[in-house]
Length: 375
Ligand SMILES: *Cc1c(COP(=O)(O)O)cnc(C)c1O
Image (cartoon, rainbow, N blue to C red):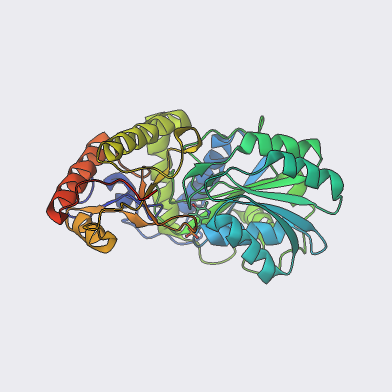
């Protein structure tokens, strides 16, 4: 994979490494009413729906900002002021949705499991059965806090069996993990330009069931986050309500071209899985342990437990890898001290092998003999 000379490889949950072609797509200026820009915007929206097999049922509503803006806008638009959400939490992004609902003044309940444990599906079914007040279920597909793969198809099935509305934070999954609206019923799915689709950061989007969105006028608690208004305005004249992130959309269009040329979701899943396998095998050979067993690990980002070796110092390790051109990420867990290494972005096996060489050399320089954790 090629990138601009000297830029580090980003083995993180985002922003991520993008291709030279994606960056080059931004070397122009477009007016917001520019015909070419309006066409690009339309094409991006249509292709995002197609990735989820949702062209016939859903609409794509894009929004300026990072992924959280899209999550906040979707929850505020979809959940009526008298609605109640049930949030499945096993990491920081689930907690963030609860915080969003605190700000928006919406009622919610939580079903929480530890960060290394998938949601309790029996408890989900039981909660929906006993509490008719719950209008929406909120779930995270890949919880990036740990890298755990949550059983989204089962969650969708149970939610549909009880005739409730499912909103999915698929931020770090969309484009790399399977998602077909025809088999996995959801009313809204949120993702962004910058994760597995390998665009540049700056916009999020939601794929929303049109029949559900049509009922959401007046729900939103903030004008700029009103996706009903964003949708109806954009449908009228193809334009954004407020200054569009023109360069981000141009880069996103180029990134989706490359995504399709690579072979879509299955090809991207294969490349990221291969990245993850090289990383995990290589780290285990150095004594490191992953937080998650392989059957719960999504091929997105891997959490490693902090080594027990007294010579290991995370900040020094992080800095030394950065000097060698590889950026990793601190842990975000409450269950155990940890750090994370990502498999997503414009990265391939050469990059992953290079990262492992850099890790091996850095451990040697630090005098660390094993990456094995305490427990
Ligand atoms: C990255 C991410 C988000 C959004 O984060 P931003 O920093 O706002 O882009 C939300 N949910 C999950 C699961 C994520 O991985």
